[in-house]
Image (cartoon, rainbow, N blue to C red; front, side, top):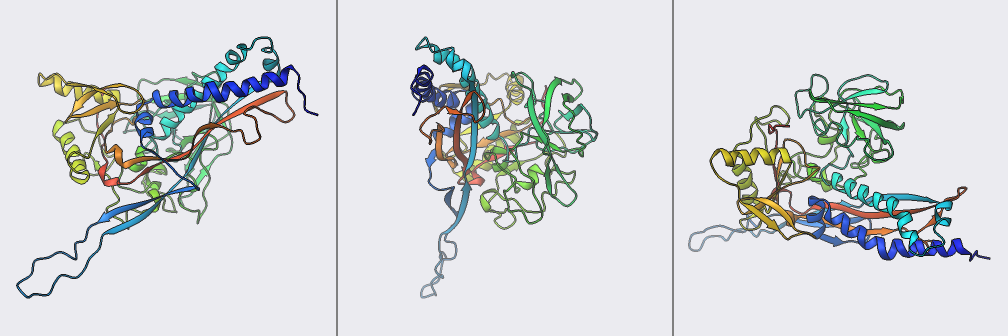
Length: 463
């Protein structure tokens, strides 16, 4: 016989609060607090099944066109060229637990239960939002930072400079420092290391490295103090949240290691994804090629974004921001996307926004400002060629992105919701006097046209 006492009634109140009061607030806050997530969540398509399918138009009827003499043979018939692409779903979760005594302590007040869970629920919401926005700047492999040097123990040096590290290679994650390895939250941050072997195989260490302290460096490196897992990895090894990446072996399927949502670093580039993540000093990538949406750039040379580098090789050297180069990047994207179609958004860091502002000020110009009403809130931006130049907290150091947002799509199998298939949002944890609630979202960022996106890289900036 089911228990129908006070505690059971309070549990139903929790379910009501989580579903009716907190869920709409969660959806609203997740879409409001970060610019990139806000703007991309406007471009959403619901999908069924585990994958979304995109039919990409990449070629015109060139063969069927031509000029001929009177009575000449007509051109051979041609056709429009299409390519099918697959966007697999990614699954993100936020989990909270509430003890039985906490539930019992709120039984006398109908309104108390909302306050009792507010800290845990809203804290989970904020962390979920931050996690999603971080993923939208990555390449699916969960890179949080890179180890600068070999060694083991409790004190690890991580790369903070964009390039020029004396030990370890430059690449995505080498300028993140301790950005994502902070100790500001109540609990220490757990991470694991993921390294690339000489055979091009990713190995994810299974032991949590719990970050207990962070020392911000002033000479280009941060130091994190961790619990000692007796791990010794090569320079360039990257940090990843436990469970967000998987070990690969010879013959592993493309994309097997990637569990996070795709981000701009993986989309706005002219290489396959493995060359971004598995940096081993030569940027040779994984033993198994990992192309974006199953299209390898070596086979489909049109499946590339514009990448403006300093001397032709990414991460080879840095250069100052120049307006002519900035305009070139804009023009390259506009030529592919079409005038009036794209780019429609410029995204970068605050440091590079200051560099852009200084260029304007040096020429005695005052940058125009814009108020944006797209997405789910209002934003303020600088005007560049009539489109907004915005900053994002998770933007990549040294890079400016020129995006055609209409060709970037969130494919969604399920929006933010609570697990409740067993009839209740709060479920009892076996063998403990506690209950848990799990927030989830099944979605992935896909790209319909990669060549309508562009990026300037290797840019100097003042810290």
